[in-house]
Each structure stands twice: as structure tokens, then as C-alpha cells.
Length: 447
Image 1 (cartoon, rainbow, N blue to C red):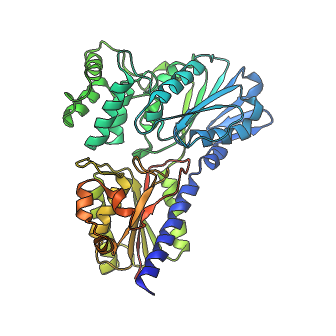
Image 2 (image 1 turned 135 degrees about the vertical axis):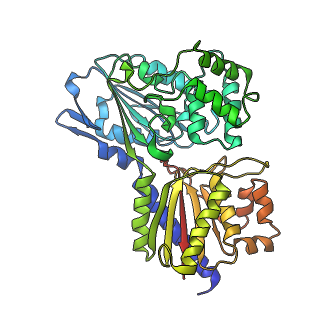
Image 3 (image 1 turned 60 degrees about the vertical axis):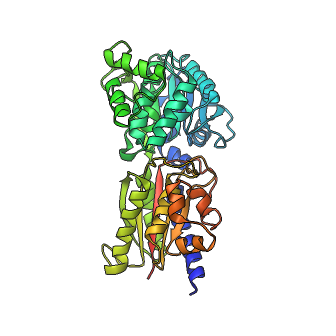
């Protein structure tokens, strides 16, 4: 088989495996598995509610998948929903009949996010003990629900978010700080419910599926503290770089002058259930099945990949090299699967995202290795501030780029992976998938 034909075949196989993973975490399917209505009784999560005894039923949510999740809930509950509002990323909305959809900025919060979050808080505040609140939460909810604490402006939060994203901080670290600058995050939405039972159905986009980190835990207890926030900023050298109001607010919290977020055991969570209905592990399991169906020996390496994207790429490609050389840990044809959320420390002003950066580093590591291809992409269909979900790289990437006058190492140094892969035709563009369970890597090794 010609080299070009084989490369295209491997791209098609990797795409099929990735798509199988995304399909397994389709938000509507996930909601349908955990939300059932039978003879007037609503079973959601582990709880059951007699709707005749519920005064009002609210459907709210936030995240890239929240509109699609709400659509599934509407199909189950129909006119039993009295009021609703979900906040999602631009381009991720879907038509709803009983709920209002508001779109806002991600990953940097914007003014529409401010308005939408206030509307959400106002709606939940109208609930009481005789009502029921269903909350649809997915990744992206943190940026989409800006409700700055007193004395902090949207510009302050935007600059703080930008600094944290650029320094390579993990999503756990970023969301720890977001929670302590907010009036909704860190379990504070539960405080607004006035004692109404609240059940959250959650699509996880964080390593370890930590409830307090997904969408900054708007309905979950927060174990983090103001002291943790100050330590994170100090560790990354950002304490003197963040806006003065942010620094002042966190310092005041550290002194005990500002109320902490509600902690585990707080009575506000007595009527709250947070239930994960889909995660990266589900996507990887489905991808594994598809890889086997297509004739590859699959192996899931980890669902908890993190660290600098370019360094992670080297490790994954080293495992692929061992498969080629010795048939360990599995023989070729092999499909190595992994996922998580890597980080990128920005040193240049290029265009790209963590998946494209990982793929570019993989292309350099795989240079000259025939029959080997890597796809790294975000399950939400977006990678950084671009229209691509990720990119493909293989043993011919560097040489093909050289023929076009492109330097792989130069583009990597400038964090400019998008402009590297675009002329090669190796960007992976899916459009919004309306789900989000972090990133997925597919590494194929064909004899």
C-alpha cells in the first residue's frame, strides 16, 4: 500500500475510534439513563420524587453540554417543568421549549456570562422547600458563570483567568481560585436554593471526577481555602501580577475577613445530590471496543493524563516505540488510548491549543516512524481559541512540513501548532460535539 494511502487509512481509523468515544458520552443519552418518569414519580439519580407533591420544578444548568442535557430532560418531563435557564458556550445552544438558553464566553468569561449568571441566581432564589431543582452541569461551567465577588470586576476576573491559563496551571488550581472570587461557585448556588431539594446531573471534564472542580462545583462542597489560592498564585509567580482587587479579596479571605465557601458537612447540602452521569472513562471504554472491532489490539494507558502537552507527547510516543520494537506491552497492530487534560505554558504568541501542541510534539517524536499515527483532540470539539478539536501527526509530519517550508520545532517553540497543521491538512475539525469529558489521544501502530 502506498504511504499516502496508508496514512489516510490510519486517519480514518483514528477518527472512527475517537467518534465512538464521543458518542458514548452523548449528553442526551447520559441524561436518559439517569432520569426516568413513571406514573408521576420522577427518579433522578438515587432519589425518587412524587411530582404531585412538588410545587414547582426548575431546570437549570451551566456548561458546554448543558443545553443538550436540558433538551433530554425536557423530553422526559415536558410541561411539568415550570421554569428553567441554562448557560452554554457560543454555538453550543439548542432549541428548548421550557427553558431559556443563554450563551456566553469561554474560556475567558464575558459580559453575557455576567448577565446570564445573575439571571440564573435570580431564578434559583425564587425556589423554596416545596420545589425541586434539577441542575445540568458539564465542563466549561466555570468560565460560563462569572459572578464576581464584591469589589471585583469582570475585567479583573478576565485578567486573572488569562494569567492562570498562560502559566500552565492545572484546571484544579484554576478552579480553586475561581471559586473564591465568585458568588455562585464553590457550592454557593446551593445556598441560593432556600432549602429546595437540588439534584445535579454532571458530565465530568476533570481528572479524578472531583465534584468540587467540575464547573467549579457550583452545587458541591468546597474543600479548598483562601490560603490555597494564595499559595497557588505564589507558586506560579502571579501574586503581584493579578489585579489588585483580586489580590486584596484573597488576602482578606486568608485573614478570615471574607466568608469561606461552604465546606463538606455544611447543612446547606442536606437536600443536595451530585451525580456523575458520564466521564472520560466511559469514552475510553467505547473507543477501546471500536479499536478492537477495527482489527487493532487496544490498550487504555490512563484516563488521568496531565502535565505539559509536549512532554506528555514524548512519553506516549515512547510507549508506541516500544510496541514497534518489541511488541510490548501489546503487539501491533496496536491502539494505545489515553486521555486527561494537559497544560501549555505560553512562550510565544502563536495560535493553537493543548491538543494541537501535543500532536506537534508527537510529530517530532514520531519522525520517520512508518505506520504510526497520533490523534489528540478535545471531546468538546474545540482546542484553545480555534475552530479545531485537535490534530493528526505521524512519521511523515515533519518531512511533509519541511517540503512546505514549515519548521516543526519553530512552530512548537512559538506555540503555533494551528498554523503548522493547517497547510498540511491535518487539523481535526468536528464542530461543537455538545459534550465535554476532557481530551482523548489515539495512537495507532500498524506493522
